[in-house]
Image (cartoon, rainbow, N blue to C red; front, top):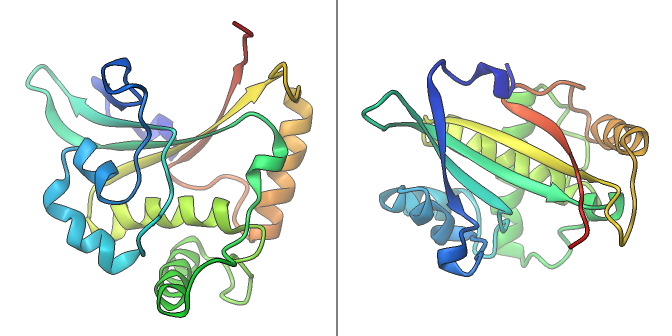
Length: 193
């Protein structure tokens, strides 16, 4: 299941970016606090070092009229394919061990061979998957990752077919299945202001 595995009657309460918060995007403990999960920060710091991914959008999923917490949606957005790749080369040794451990656990969860290198130019994609793993397997919460790809951004126009080609190349290089549970690739037409 992907985002279509969201429970019936679910709704999203967007917590970032919000105009009231100057459209701030969050990482580390701040993103857990924004999601109402501040008490779980220690688990995040045990899993991933400081200066982790900065999320383009965050939402809490609720079900029914009583707005009971059901899970989270974490969003990564890209306007052109070059943004899909970056490396982990700046991690200091102590952090590198923590990153390697988290990525190894994520690979195992997804059935990826441990020898596939995720700390080179696949690092950004891999660390987003690792944080999905963190929510589902460390915190034991329902979670979904939405990768949003903007079509035809006026600064670097990329059409749907090119995105599909780049995403397939990325997934093949990462050794992940073409359809990853709890992950959706969404395409939105960009509009110039």
